[in-house]
Length: 443
Image (cartoon, rainbow, N blue to C red):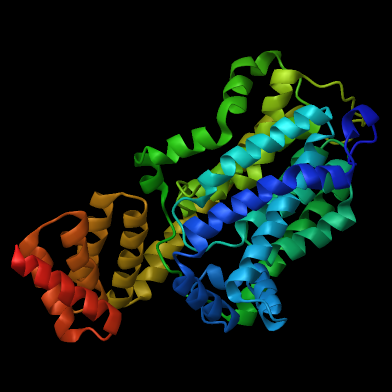
């Protein structure tokens, strides 16, 4: 086990697997019922795009799980079983690694409570997507990263960074946790050298994938800051996901002794939130998985306490005296860099696209809003797309169905559906459109 204290280790590996296995199977079955089966055709299409190198960014660069699934398919498993097995494997590894991570500071029974919190929150991560196989592996990679950083296994951490970047971009932020944890343990030269090396490895993997697959056009706009800020689900889902431990931690923070690693790792959370609040739709709760272990660990310690001692390391860098100022500068600089990146992408890169290409962004955004139940935002984006490319058959079909099923307006629905039938090429959509037209005419 992660901690050798028998009072904390408690259960061996086989017993832990037996304990969590039924819960893993239940979550995989639920995911199959809610996500995998209803969207099977779309998932197969996206898988084929990734493995052929033709998927949009950033999905094209998240190759690890797709190619693992492709390997299983070539070994004889069906598409569906391949992804079910991967979800089973990474959900189980996430649960075991979370238990291992918590066992550094908490007794076995408290670790089990923490993992049960995890399983109770997992269904929330199934909201608002149809295929995102990289997120559960991302949790496992982050947990391994946390353990390696806390254990000061820098060589293994460097290897992990490269592998995890093949799965998703988020681990590019892991070196920040290493920096916050080790800044007062190493001479300044060694500290900077290692930090730069870790950044080089993670960004090197990021750039390597873009060289191999070329720079792909993103499937939507990059900045979601105002979208996330104005929608209440952004706050409600995050609140529900982290739950009671976060509430209790906030209420007793000043009177709780949080272990060094966890206290330092929490400094990373604002950076994580800034990236996702501006570049992702945070109502997709799966995005919060990497910081779940940190919040739950601190929350459980605030409730139950910890007897775990920590070795003392002599302060050796000047950061000790200026740490608050330096952290503030780093946070502001990071926020500015993210803002500049968003500005460059939307104002410079998108300006090079044709109106037809930009309209596709609005269509994608509208579909995302619609899937999340944000009807007004969906309509706004569809209508913006129409202004740029009114002859788009797919858009006419979406608007016709939107004004029939979502926001009923008979005349508008008929107009868009008739327009689609004249120019559409998808036989299934044409059949559905004609059916809706007949129903509207009968009213």
